[in-house]
Length: 129
Image 1: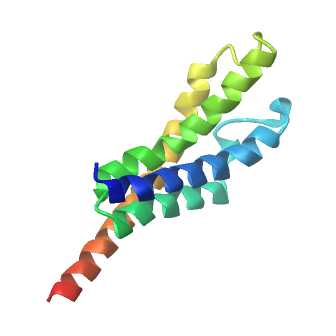
Image 2: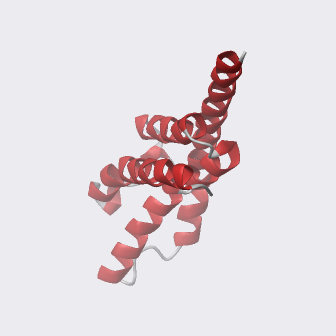
């Protein structure tokens, strides 16, 4: 991974992680139902953050998709870890919580990385022609 790719991927991961995580972390546990709790504009942020490295740097589709897509389950796991530290009896089925957010997280990142990669190629080809 080139330094330029890393310099774009890390901030994009953090923005997507916080966009999904902050509202999720601030919601009381009894009011959460996955995946409905994350099916909103937060996934648009994830898609945009996946498009940015695919478009701006040489990260490419696969790297953008996988790194940014991992931000959604990482945000959910951060909540699980915090809650379990406070009360070990919570989140007994945490692997299912992670599994429920894989499709929305990686799905939105897939769309964003695809669009970003295609736009990058289209503009690069037009500039070089």
